[in-house]
Image (cartoon, rainbow, N blue to C red; front, side, top):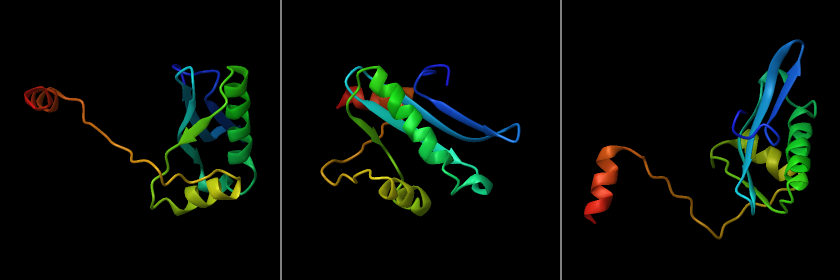
Length: 110
């Protein structure tokens, strides 16, 4: 939230945090990370309202494309994104690299 305060969102109801989206940008595109709504508050439009808020914030930053990453086994999340009109991409691979001294040393040897 501190790193991207204009594009990230927290939903509060009944005096407690019930949802959040961490959303950032790199100057060309935006990326939505870590979207969640507490299960007791789902299906009330909170997630969609947070997404709209994040997208409007990205638009204000002149960002015209936004992506997100959802785990394949996150059935609830994937159903949500499909329902609100996001398109699943099958044309790319997503890679991770654990950034620690051992891996950096091994990387430099190759």
